[in-house]
Image (cartoon, rainbow, N blue to C red):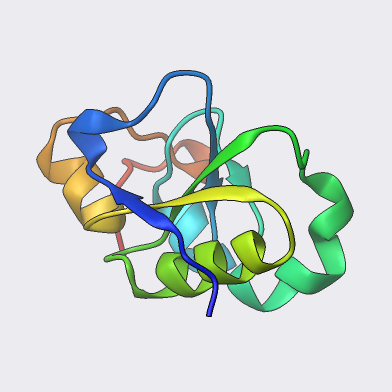
Length: 108
């Protein structure tokens, strides 16, 4: 089993790339500006979109899917960190959200 670290929203390391592994409808409702969106089920087929030399800060809604993604990424040679509490923690911490189509951003 690959080891990965978990970081809190208020302790995210500088210079990492936020990777959102939620489903399309969740992303559309609200996400962090500048995040990369690759749903968990598409990750193996879209691995070439990730830079193996970049720290990946993996986020989902609460932390379960992102933990699985971080574990899988680390097993494949990537530097990945699970964001504890996911987008729920992001929202609670007052971090900014954007939504698709001019909607008021929310976390689903």
